[in-house]
Amino acid sequence: MITIDSKVYTEDKFLDIYREQYGDGIETWGRINPMGTRRERGMNKYTTSNPLFILAIDENGKMVGNASYNDNGSFIHYAGVSVHQDHRKKDIGTRLIKKVMEKIDEKNKPAVVSFNVKVMPMEKWKETWSRVGYIDSPEHSELNEETRNAIPLEVIEYNKSKYGDAYMVYPIGSKPMAKAWAILYKGGFHIVKESGGISFGTGDGALHGRSFGGKKYGKKEKPKDEEE
Image 1 (cartoon, rainbow, N blue to C red):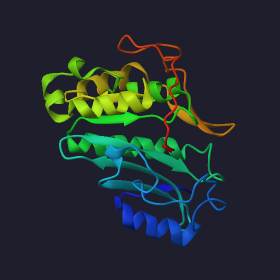
Image 2 (cartoon, helix red, strand yellow; image 1 turned 90 degrees about the vertical axis):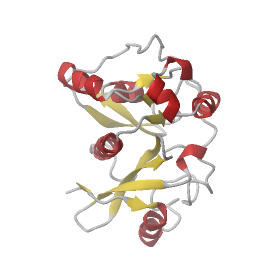
Image 3 (cartoon, rainbow, N blue to C red; image 1 turned 180 degrees about the vertical axis):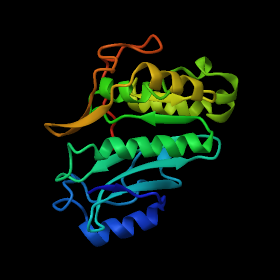
Image 4 (tube, rainbow, N blue to C red; image 1 turned 30 degrees about the vertical axis):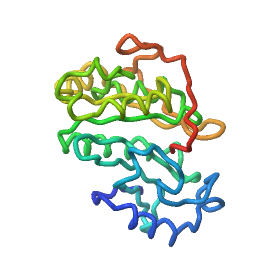
């Protein structure tokens, strides 16, 4: 049985647990590069100052998945999800992402999420996050005033330059929108295994092939770093 731990872990504590159980993670987790801090791995610079981690734990107390986010003061930046190679296609990644969404919502701050389209199709990511109120790759000027004041222009420009259209924003005031999506689209989403990684499939309520905010999905800009 896999449990999503209710605790939130600092990066130092997460790395202590990871290294004790999996070492560098290359052979034991299925990583391409050794596990280190997000800063050491050259990750999105808005996810390296204070990343917080949520863990998925098996019945023996071993970590089998993790998801993270970074509180940047006035806004939050999603920092990725990773599931052990032996535990994919079990909804673990889905459950971790849902928990991250809950944590972000509790903060009552706007948030930014960028996607690794090298391992997951952009449309699957966007279907998932759109249903809880995230808007598709907006310009800074398109955000409402409260959100613009909380998320600096440079944050949006950085994500645009690094990820192309592969980013979304959760603006201040999105809670009613998220509730509406939950009512209208009740189909769930699940993780399916694909060559080179995992991706999100969706239930019957998903908006297959749709675009959001006037944006189309097809563009797949690959981030230069290894967002998990």
